[in-house]
Length: 214
Ligand SMILES: O=C(O)c1ccccc1N[C@@H]1O[C@H](COP(=O)(O)O)[C@@H](O)[C@H]1O
Image 1 (cartoon, protein in one colour):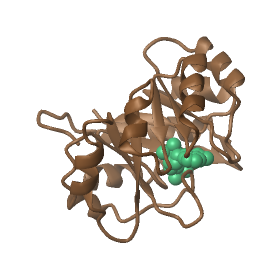
Image 2 (cartoon, helix red, strand yellow):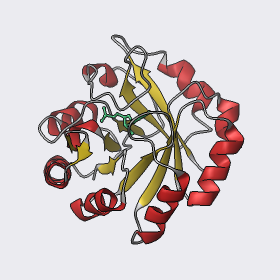
Image 3 (cartoon, rainbow, N blue to C red):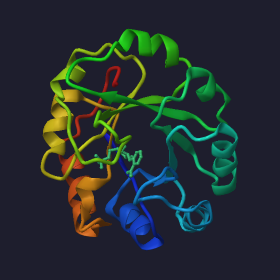
Image 4 (cartoon, rainbow, N blue to C red):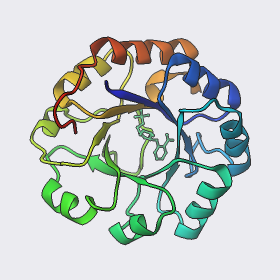
């Protein structure tokens, strides 16, 4: 079953709507941008959640002590790092790390990435490279490039997914999980109906893995 993470939640109502839509994981952005949330509010939301929902904090080139403090304060389960964080940085994080690979027109040097980060991260998140941005852009990248990659660590597919395109994205990339932010928003706010449609689309197409998913 392909897991679903809904990211960029900024208030309790939308976090609960994501959970009620069936998301396995939810994400809070602590980096600059319109979806930024304060640690105090994120902690309050996380404390209110039911069990078995994985909570993720999104950071971009943040000072490591600050990341670790926020992780402890909010009781985050995972850290999603979207900048130039090194393997050593990932090693010293107090929570398991999901490291983003920004996908451009071609296939990245995935063997190099796997060798550097593979032992230090829980998963790689593939997001679209957009000049001047670090994530949450709503832009897709060519999914066919994922088929050429030899990453052995679980892959989370992100970047411009929405309820209509996610089934095709899963078919082409066979990820462990998908991650969405812009594609379940209306006028910049999380839309409960779109979140439900997104989860439904993923559940309707998810194959059962018996092999080695990535
Ligand atoms: O959502 C943001 O504002 C954000 C800011 C900085 C880094 C990452 C961010 N979000 C992540 O970006 C991807 C793709 O989002 P989208 O679906 O294309 O809008 C996703 O993993 C978000 O977690």
